Length: 126
Image (cartoon, rainbow, N blue to C red; front, side, top):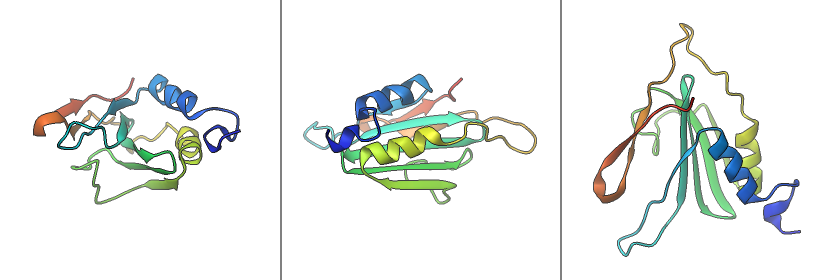
């Protein structure tokens, strides 16, 4: 069994679980058009969850407050995990989804960098 399949589910299956939960994926590219990472983002409740896969053994995921101005380089993190894909994805999938502000207000979405230097609005997961 490969390290990607430890714990029973493949990395692909874990990524599909994230998509089922409302994650949107971006594929940043270098100057020659090659994909340099896979980035998943989901705004929900009062938080934004971010996943960045640089390689199967180099993955980071974190949760930031919904009002964070730069979700890819946040000033404040509520949770963070770094390691191999299967470990980080399992941790991310086990996070609670019931984060709400004290007044019950939800995140309205966030801006993320897009291709060609353009920003893209990411609406919250439903």
